[in-house]
Amino acid sequence: MNNLVTNPSLIVKYLFMRFYFQIENFVAQVAKQYDKPDTILLDIGSGHSPYHKYFKKTRYLTNDIKQNENKTIDIIGNIEKGLPKVKSSSLDYVICTQVIEHLTDPQLAFKEFNRMLKPNGKLFLTTNFLYQIHMAPYDYYRFTSFGLEHLGKSVGFKIDHLRSHGGIFQVLSYIITTLPVRLYLKNHYRLTLIYLVAFSPIILVLNLTATILDGLDRDRELTINYEVIYTKP
Image (cartoon, rainbow, N blue to C red):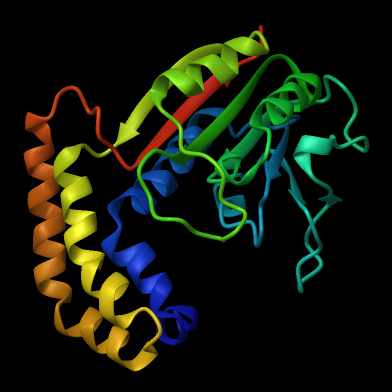
């Protein structure tokens, strides 16, 4: 909670961007089904491991390109360049949330996922379709559902599950509610905080309305994010 008070971008992320709740819910549901004793999971680009709390039985390993201040990263390295410390066919699960858009060659990462996973191992992945540039200049791609299918099939994965996070109305709600921050408040901490607090009821109503109206958008061709479960045969 202290981070939310001191960092308005986190308030934007977790209170007003519904797809972040959907990412969290996706991982929570995955854990309910797959968190089992005698299994090993590797969290790619784990940062401070926000999803570790959902996996109580699985051996939970973490990866990132550098060590964090709490020294909780188990395997330091770039997934594109390979993680030689991880033996081939040694992992039951890989989690990779909001990472592949920041890779210069996502297909190299998929080849490494394939190498590390056991037969019948699972890759749980989320990524952006429509989202602003972030972590600049290390923001390279946006993915359609067909692109995500292609990446998986290129290394022999089966696609068990692919779902969009919101439709056109949630996209509109996201653009409208964050527009003042993007145009006028981006570099003004206090004004951003005032806006978020003062308009939070309106923003929450807009997001709720958008969620309901998204029931009309059956194609979901315009979405913010995707979640995917792949299986290595």
